Length: 110
Image (cartoon, rainbow, N blue to C red; front, side):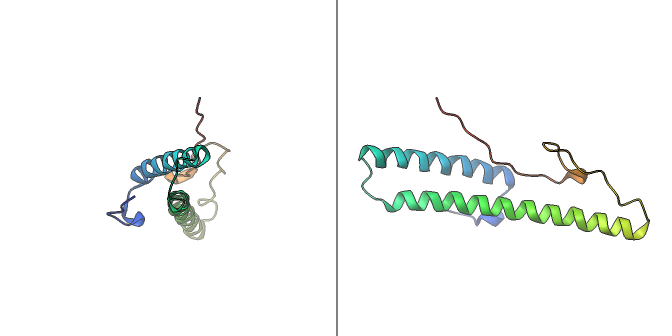
């Protein structure tokens, strides 16, 4: 998989698209390995590492977003008591102030 851009330079949508492609590639390579058609075992390890790299970048972005939201909350709380307190987000709900949380998507085949 040739990388023309660094993962940090790509947008969220592009990363999620690359993640789907990398997972599909890893799945196909696993099936080739099981059926004895895979000649180069390094390809399987490379595809798994690519999935891990993409997931790591997405998680880093999620953490950065959460830290930015917390910083804004603490600044708002310091400026006026009670104003910085926001209700906690329910599970499955988008957190306050537009923080986006990336969740793993389960894929069902068959």
